Amino acid sequence: MRVEVAVPEIEVMRSDRSRTDLRLRYCCYAALVVVLAIFAVVRIRLRNMPLERDEGEYAYAGQLMLQGDPPYHLAYNMKLPGTYAAYAVMMAAFGQTVAGIRIGMLIVLLGNTLLVFFLGRRLFGILSGTVAAAFYTILANRLSTVSLDGHATHFIVLMALAGVTLLLDAIETQRTIALFGSGLFFGLAFLMKQHGILFAAFGFFFWAWSERKREANWRRLVSSGSVLAVGMILPFLLTCLIIWYAGVFRQFWFWTVSYGAVYEKELKFSEGWKSFRAMVPFFARPVNIWLTAGFGLTALFWNRRAREQKVFILSLALFSFLAVCPGLWFRQHYFLVLLPAVALLAGLGISAPYEYLQERNASKAVALIPIALFALLYLSALRGQRKYLFRMDPLHVHRAMYSGDGFPEAMAVGDYIRGHSSSQDRVAVLGSEPEIYFYAHRRSATGYIYTYPLMENQKFALRMQSDMIHEIEDTQPKIVVFVDTLSWNWKPNWDASEPHMNIFMWIRSYLDAHYDLIAEVPIEGATSNLWGSPCRYYIFQRR
Image 1 (cartoon, rainbow, N blue to C red):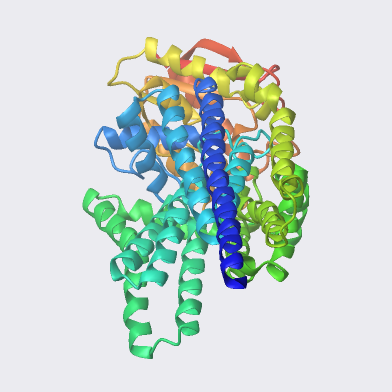
Image 2: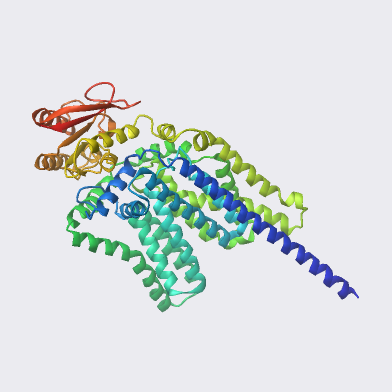
């Protein structure tokens, strides 16, 4: 009789637990849909927000690629060309417009969010995955990290998360094709920007640790490791081959390797540390999400599933942080590569206490406290940004991020050039505003679409100035735009005798000899000018 009585009780308990899990699953999927919908509404509403200069670089290089022109021919930069290709794909799909780029970025960021969800669900359960995805959408929609823009770091995250997802599948199933695919995605993360190599390092480290834990023999380790390594290296090798075939390998190697190495050594550690401390108030918000992630770290000591994934989550967080650090240039958008690890830990910070209460058969009201806390934190974070996300128009949101940089005015300059030149005319922008070339749909007279390197304290700077001068004089562009702001990155305390300032003497004499001033566009909020107040875009036409 005791057995007959006990069996129905056990069945009832299992049935109750099953129904609870089913309800949780449905609620999580519903919450995920709502979160993605909010995210999409915000991004679509802000789709006409002007491009900043990095986006302008990617858009212009992508535009050239769609015209059959290879990277590093008319657009020099030390970044690898993966993001250029990604922009070309987005513009081919959605149009060569600002809105087309923004819609493409929406697809990329929805992909990032879903990959965060899948990772969190796989590691710590569906509740953790949902919370992580929701928090990621908040972190990836903030003004202070300029995450509303289409930076290369978003593409690094997309490729790295895809690589991590496939890596976990390869470790579990021992499928060679999954391991190779994982390596390909890690290689593509590096191709998006050099910082991505840290995720490749993470992938190889975690795979090696997993295989040693499995006590695999050395022959299998070498064989599988070779497959993963080949996948990681292949995208870069194919890129080198394509660029060599296009005839621009010398420029590519100089900018991405020779100059890139010099640039990464430009800052001293003390300067980098000062920069990092200045950035902390920008990226470590909303504070409640970061505190939840910190609590998620403690779960590594008292939650079973968290303990099982301790090496994974800690190493992912470590390598994600290291991916922020190359060169010690702690710019706001560099911290975007850290967001998935923070979101996963925050998801664990909610799901671990929920599981703890469930395991101890707490009442439904008590067990739901962590979920209620998550909803409160999410809505609070959303409310804190409501002004920017739901009320302000795209132009004012952009000005809130980039006060005085002149990016909205660059749209007017590009439109003006497009209306006063033909598609065959060449244009030179004397300043670091490559977005003007994109808006104008005109090719540059020089590959120096940024003038920052010309002002830097590095051994190639003066040679770069000379090269830029020769390229412009040889091309004789119909339109020249001089950007009279810190777009040049010159130092206000420099005087005319500073060697780096010689190029401004050439600009004066060259424009006076061959060009007429046809338009000026004042730059709202800009300071530190050379030619006159307020700061302006000066547009010249060749006589």
